[in-house]
Every structure is written in structure tokens, then in C-alpha cells.
Image: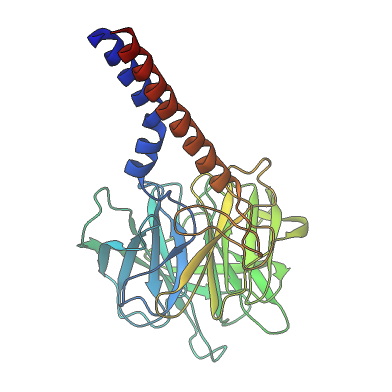
Length: 340
């Protein structure tokens, strides 16, 4: 009888295991989250970490050389980086991670369209350990071949490492390509290689084949073609991305696997919302087909009417297995006691 009860207990444990594991793992990374840090009130850039899955780098639109690493599972800041070796930032607007593992920060804003004849890019290696620390950064001087611009989007191609900037103008901006390699000793001239709409941020997909540009109310994902004097260009018309409505819509980045886009905004406790990438093939995450539709903190998806999504269906199935296992255990125990 003792051996039979042990067998039944083992069977029940195997049935109950998935639910237990789900509780232990907690929220999934790369889903909707709220930035909880009270210091982050003007999140103007967003970049998925290459070294630390589920971590997103951001910064304020202000004159402090601080970069924050936020965990998408909790919304909490897990690292505050203080850049040294750079001057006082004027208007940091964008952030990206390059193929070399370095973080690039674009101090490229100029709301008066021509007040500054140059802007800056800062660059430092992404930390291997997530903790509060000071990082040594290089500072690059940037000028545009056709005169000063206001810009909020800086993108680093994940294969070539070339840096691009998209300028912001009400009538439409320009896409600018930097030199093949940035120089810390001279001026880096960025040259116009294409026309773009009003842009507040942009990001390359991890495979380098797509470029998404966002504004306050819309976003487009373009195919990217390598080659040419500027190192690449937009290839054809963009695909509309159903960007969620956000108050001060400022930032965008791809998830580390390239399956989805993460859209951020300014403000206290601002939300970062996930939307599947139109060009990613078969999505690996929940669909966000309608503006404002995303995933909740637990990773469950719901339609605008609140109907349960696939995550909820999966939880219901696990619940069914647990119930079935418990039933088997009870019935088996009853039969064993009858035989005594």
C-alpha cells in the first residue's frame, strides 16, 4: 500500500509541477511594464540590452549624464550608470546598443532648429554586471552636412555598426548617415540619405533587415537595404505598425529577439507597451493588433472588451490538469483503502 501511495503522490506531483513552475518564474520579460523609478520622469529613449535579457536602457530628457537599466519583469531600476568623460548633456533624446556591445546615447535634441552648430554622441561598453556604477564614455562631435537640425532618433545598425540619425521637422525630416566609423578626435559629418516623416525615435531590428520610425501618433516599419554611399537606405514603403496611443510618445526599440517592438513615453510611471513587429514573420509573443491593446504585467493578453487571450487559455488548461491529477489521487486512495 505504501508503494502504491508513493506512486500516486509522484503522479500528482508531475501533474502539479507546471503550475508550480509558472508561479516560481513570475512575470515574463519583454511584455508591457510600468517604469517605477520616480527619478525617470522624461524617458526619451529606449534600448533593449544585448547582454541582459529583459533589461531596457533609458534616460531622461535632461542635463544629467545618467542612464537607467529597467527590468521589464518588475519595472524596477536595477542599474544606474553615471557617464564620466563627457561634458554636461544638453538634450539627450535617444539610446541604442551596437553590435560591438557598446551603448550609444544621442545628445542630439535642438528644439530651436539651429541654435547649436554641433551635437554629441556618447558611447561606452554595456556593463557586464547590473549595479549602480560609473562608466567611462567617449564623446563624439556631430555636424550635419546641410546645417543644424533638431533630432530625437539615433539608430545603430546591428551588423555594420554605422550610426544613423533621423531629424525631426513638422513638414518631414531627413535620414542621416554617419561615417563608417565615428572619430573621437574630429568632427563626424552626417549626410542626408533619405526623407522620413515626423520622427521622435527609431530602431533597427536585431537582424538589421528592418528599421522602425515612430512619431507621436503613428509608426512605420521599413525594409532596410544595405549598400550605397550612405551604407544603406529604406527599401520601399513602410508597413504600418498599430502603435498604442501614448501621451508624450517618445521612444521605440525592438525586443532582443526581434519579434516585437516596445513603445515608451515620457511622464511619471510611464508605460512601455509591446506590439508585434509586422515584418517578424510568425510572432513569438502575444498580438497587439489594436491601438492601446498590449499585454498586462503578468503577460496575459486581452482584447479591448476584456476577453481572455491565449495566456489565459493556457492557465485554464493547466488548471484542468491540476484538477484531473487531484481527482486521480483521491480515487486511487479510496480504492486502496477499500482493499485493506
